[in-house]
Length: 290
Image 1 (spheres, one colour):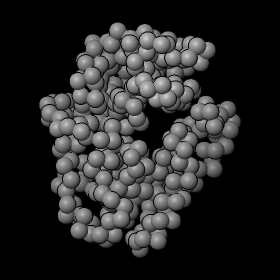
Image 2 (cartoon, one colour):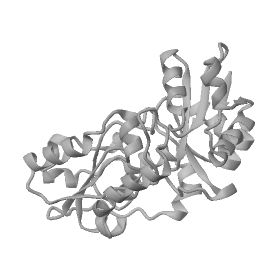
Image 3 (tube, helix red, strand yellow):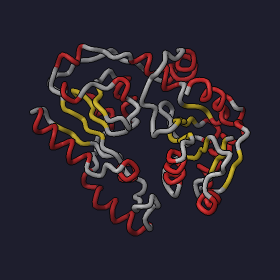
């Protein structure tokens, strides 16, 4: 049986409710889990994001051998756009990081291809390495607070290429339990990070990139559409088409185009519209393909 849980925020809780409606799931406030634990009949649990208690929900499900469905921002056409919104759904993980079958091209071609441009695989051996680090909440959730420093240090030891770090402008900062800090503390953290935020756009930073190195950023989808090689961690959706870090300075990899189309097709089967949440299409496709 599937149980859905709120997020302590109206907007994302409503998204979970939509999914529960289409999957005949039981919807509960997250406080019910905190007070009573997981229902004995639960085979799946579902919620949005990993803050305000949902991380504990997912971790508890994993400990008890139950599946969890993590709803979050989409790979294509991301953003909270009301009834026209798209969201990714990942079984037992932060992102889809494996392509275990050959997915049909139908969803990608019909729903997303008209909105994107797939550029030729490109070679830019004189370009910079663009590093996309995790946000602080993502680093907390995965216990990888030192990833950026360790990665930049490794890059400087293994290549002479210029390294450009592009921080995602943060919207929140969480404590060691996954709850946002008080607004005044968040603002202080943001003020400290602000000098590191680049004034350039993502398109500008990608324009002259040799490759992208990412922790879990969804911007790897844009990079791959641009034809740029990606190196990433298993927390990133680009893991199936990622090159090995040992080859970071091997220009031969610029000539080896991964199966981008197969990856795009797989991503399309891991994100769904709110209407597909409500009418059960998302739940049916998840059971069939995930």
